[in-house]
Length: 330
Length: 163
Image (cartoon, rainbow over all chains, first blue to last red):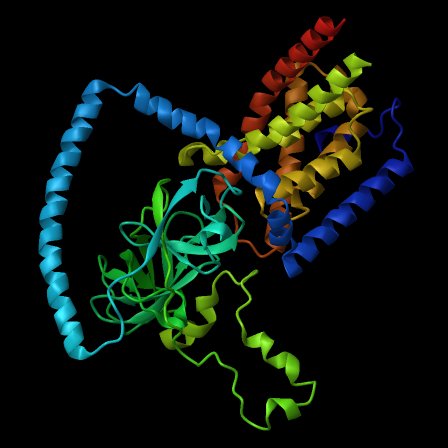
């Protein structure tokens, strides 16, 4: 500190008591941080205090809501006309595409029936709105206006019209928090649509992008390749667009190819999103704990706690797909 | 008695407003420039009425800010406690600085705060923040004269009105 250089002030001699108090409070803060980091106290505290926290969020998002309303109210007539014209054209185009889509979907349905797949095309979704609350800068998270009372649960996939946006990581009674796929702590198992190569897309460090750090050197990856969810790991259902490769090259070690991708979803936009209701079917090792050995009644008490450990603990597992799929990507 | 109560309400109100200001979302390009409002408001109060601002209060405001922010419990409590401690220790000098010197001191304090946050984040296993991360203290310092003058003016008006 620049102010430190000429020692203590004669008016306020540094008292030992003050320093001691500082140390006590700082130690308390550190203890809180460690406990929260380990046990996830924060989400429990926030759940308990949601009666206070949620109105404050609504209050804090008022200015930006008001700004949006005002910008609509005072919008230029010419701008509105132009926007209207553009939307009309888009609607026509979309309708045309939709008509074609319908026939394709019908054909697809027939083919699927032929293949006797048990997956159905119908997906149940729930429309959610983003509440514009900033949860810490550089954290790619959004707050949604649906919560536990609307049937939202941790792990639900958030999508928008163009692709996967992220997943719900925290649920409060009437709001919930979702982590975006661009968060550095997030991983989503993907397939490159053109070649069928399986890999994992992580959130890039800084910036709204995805990074694919471990693609085999021999793999064929080109700029413009589309990424879709592979459905591995059992969290994201397969076949949803995730992004598009924008650059690829060798890593410094030369062991892997690393690629960057642009998310397909408009992650930076604050608008309506969809919450997928049916989660992907769990793929990989069966979750049911094996009942091999003697019957449960005869099991020793030491074995008993092992069974609950296999259930998912949603508190801090932000990228549950990572562990189960990284093996498949190599 | 009523006057004291009004002043107490005003004091608490500004702190609540600072928490609200912290939560207000901004468009993405100017998001990193958002100053750390609770720090500015607490600094003002620790310079103007040091009998009300204690380390305990800073800690409580910090915990409140943490709960609203939902990032890591205790992080802002640590930062605000450190900030208020330094401000209270050098209060007598900071008060009689001319405005530009005070602004520089505030810049130093906010920078120190960012360094603390950086340490906490890095120790917690977060990635390195982008360069824009270091811009916020400068914006905060640029806002300081206005925050100080506006709060001072409002406080003076409140006192006249009550008297």
